[in-house]
Structures are given as structure tokens and as C-alpha cells.
Image: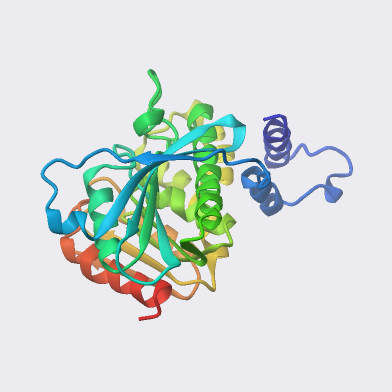
Amino acid sequence: MARRCAVLCLLAACLAGTCPAGAAAQPDLDAVRLALYDYDAGLPLESAIGPAPVVPSEPAKLKALRRRFRVAYTSVHDQRVSGILTIPTRGKKPYGAVLLLAGSGGHKDTDYVRLAADMLNTSGLATFSIDAQYHGERKRKGRSGDIHFVQSPTNRDAWIQTVQDLRRAVDYLCSRPDIDGKRIGFLGFSQGGMLGGTFIGVEPRVRAACLAVPGGGFLEWAATLGVVSPSDRRRLEVAASLTDPIHFVGRFAPRPLLILAARKDELIPTAATVALDAAAREPKNLIWYNTGHVLPPNALVVDARRFFDEHLRGR
């Protein structure tokens, strides 16, 4: 926490044009950003695994395709993170795996996350979905799940924490002998896709990533919608420079990136999606669907599935 405060103070001073003497020897802004998401990978995971919640009226045929477990592990700042691990019953070990992250109103076992996990399991891939900070089992009274409003210091810190939680989730997957640590992917939805844009830019072990209905360019987004007061503008400017996925997603190249977007999205402005895509580098693919924020079924069961089949299974 002390390091985070020091980094924030240095960044704020430099953005304000008041860097101390000798600032030329200080880390550049990109190094400051990366430092915020660094962590001690030697910290014990202290993982615990048990039965996952029962899915009501689940077809027996689906049960036979995978096994579900509830997992908890220790992340940075002594945070306990909860997740759902699914292991396919078919295919050859070690399995490739996909990390999943829900949007601001979801959690590790929300319906669309579970459906995505089931779809990937039928392709012979394991999945690991976690609760972002202030979501699911990590909910806190008086805390919002809309942590992409990073002008709030609480949300800014929750954003950074969740990216580090995802990195620790990769640590957990790599600790399992039934998971191939060289075939790990990421699939994030809405806010989970935005967080994913930051995460994949700082995590070198992710081999392929799909961001569904994401956005970036927080400053322009806020200005267009008029949702930030003039007094919060400076705070947003500093926080966005640390968190906005447009500053990170380009680092993911040359690994493959798929962005799934909605032309009639009522939550994510088209300009925000375009900004994120513009910040990404090749190889990348942006697919537009003529829908609102809820994508059509073929976005996942055809396009995302084909993408992960190609890059995590070599098919």
C-alpha cells in the first residue's frame, strides 16, 4: 500500500508539471503504470477447493461434461478471492484454461459466465471465473460494483486490486498439474472486458484474449456523457492514466485479441469501443453485432469458441 501511495504521488506531481528536481531520473509513466500492477508472486496462495454451488435443474448430460469446484485463494493485500473452477471430463490432460470475468452487475457464477464456461468445457477447455472486488462473495455494504468509475479512489484501488487478483488466478492455474500453463486465455464481459484490457497488458502468461462489449478512453467517455463534475475532472485524469485499458491493451501484441462489440449498445458508447480497438495492436479482430449490450448467442458459441479453439487448442 505504501508503494501504491508513493507511485500515485509521483504520478500526480508529474502530470501537474511539478516533478521534483532530478525527475529525469525518475521512472517514466509507463513504468509507473506497470509498477502498480506488479506483485510478489512468491506469496503463498493458500488455496482451498471444495464443491461448487449446485446449478438448479442442470441436465445430466451437461453434468457429465465437466466438474465444478469452488476455489478460494489469497491475493495481494491479504485479500481472499473466490472463484469457480470447471474441469472438463473429456479431452487430454493437461487442459488449456480460460479465465472469466463478469460485468459490473455479475459475479463468478452469474448466468452468462456459467454459460460461457459450459461452452468452453465442451471444447475441452477448463475455466476459472473469479469475483472482482466488491462482487459476489466479496460484496461490501456501501461499495459499488461499478468500479470503472475510477475518479473515486475506492474504485480506482478496486480496479488495481482486481487486475492483481486475476494475475494471482493465473498463479493458481499454473500450480495445477492438470492445467497447461502455456495455454491460458481470458474472456471478459463489459466491465470485465475493460478490466481485461488492463490485465492482459500486464500479464505475459495469457496466450489469447477475448473482450466482449468493452470500452476504453475514460476521459473522452466521461466528457461525452457529461458524467463527471469539473471538480472530479482532475482526479479522473490521474486515475484514468493508471487504469484505462487504452494504456495497456497495446502491450498484449503479438498475442491474438478478439473484441466483440454491439452497434446498438445502450451502455458502452461506440466511440469507447473504437478507442479501445485503436489502442490495440495486431493481431486483432473486431466483430460488430447489430444488437444491444446483450450479444447474440453466436457471438460466444461460434466466434469466441472458434477463437479459443484455434489459439488454445490448435484447431
